[in-house]
Length: 274
Image (cartoon, rainbow, N blue to C red; front, side, top):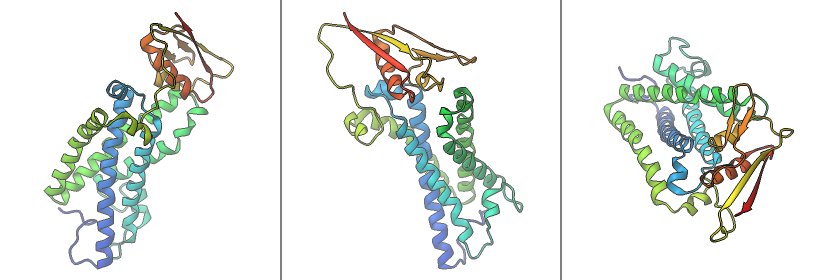
């Protein structure tokens, strides 16, 4: 049965325009969500650094996520402006309100969970990092619910949209990997997706031995250092931070990224030429 919210039969020009805006914003949100998920996974697994030699900036992931949420909110906010269908705010805020469909409920829950995660993104400075991390990992089921919403909605409105969604789903990872592999890193640094390389060349013929220390008076155990350098820093369940005082040369870049990312500037690095 076609979706009555997007059915464009005998509608006024006003409602036709509203539905077009809702459909366009939904497609933009889906594309941005696929790219956000790909970038987040590649960042967390270290593939960005392996492909480009640079660390991924969290701001790039947040930028994509913000665009996903903004276009998703635009999609949902369009429906109350329909004239031919009485579609109040309750239906876009409360799942199954007035007998709503399951696919609509999944879309509502997925978008609201994404908004909650975005609003609490800065709380890692005030709450225990592991609790904050567990909550933010709910982004994965939020994406899953939104994907189900999009796919079932597309199926209800025609196979062409279903094929379009499938193509975007497969294209997003390939496009992300291709950009990382083929585009010069300096362009990705310029748009804020990658971290700039450290300034100053290393001295030829000399290896740098790095020493890591953490100021326990400053450290608030946010765990950002662990996210940036999991081989150097480990935050235990009891809240204690363990770290490698003398990382090997392959871990130096991670340690530097963790020191730059620490909001309390609690990590000190010392290098000794040998």
